[in-house]
Image (cartoon, rainbow, N blue to C red; front, side, top):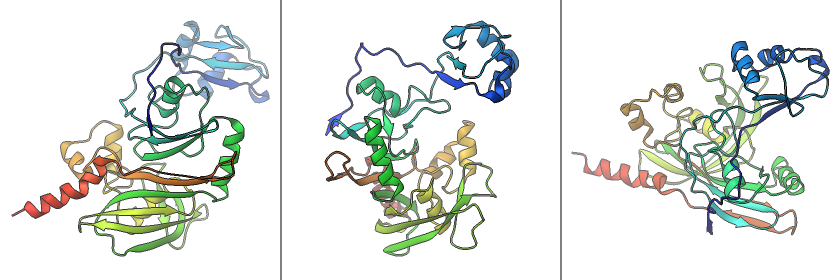
Length: 335
């Protein structure tokens, strides 16, 4: 098992680059009008400043705000570097060959650039420190979920592996620590997932056991209780479908929210305060740990090149495993 490779001076620094191709619908539109209407995270005045500074180019050439766009033009935006939140960077290479990488991703670390994160992502780390020009992520984990991430080194391998995930030919196991005493050794939760109409967070999903809305998607997860101390339970989760937030939403609906989960945990207002940087000391105590206690622990896939099964397993991170011992010690020492 190898640690992350050290950075080398031969790599040029990564820089954000956003590009879009002009279609017939926008042909004849002025550059400033096009940017202001389509990319509203900057207002018209700000886009005018970006164009004047030469950070917006068309067909690789600096241009004026009055330039008229044509079908097929490539509009590029090269924003200035921005401050990014700190992340964990100590990923480990569990397996590697000419086609595949299996990474044990720490938390918190995003897989792919998005929002405030660009350089502070697994994608950037692999490009800069692992000599991988284009990482193809076959599965992705949330920023606060740790564990196995499968990365293809070329498009053919990526296509074959993605097809296995789509056709449910991949075995995945997660370890998850939940609040409460999980009631049975084994539970199979079959139902549907759909956006939660009662949540203030648009991306939050809800698990329905019956009477799902029309846009719901079927899902199934098998849970096995591994250990419990009456207030916390460690489970093994085997998702039989691959829906977004499937494990976390299902456990919340069952009444056993994931420890440390700001969105599907004990109180979703923790998530709202987190994104506005307003979590209190009491909030952090309720969360117990800074990340959600969900870990992708095991993965089995057929190697596209050899046809043989490839299996990898990684242990539960210590900061999660310690919670069961710490919580038990606190309860036994209480008067």
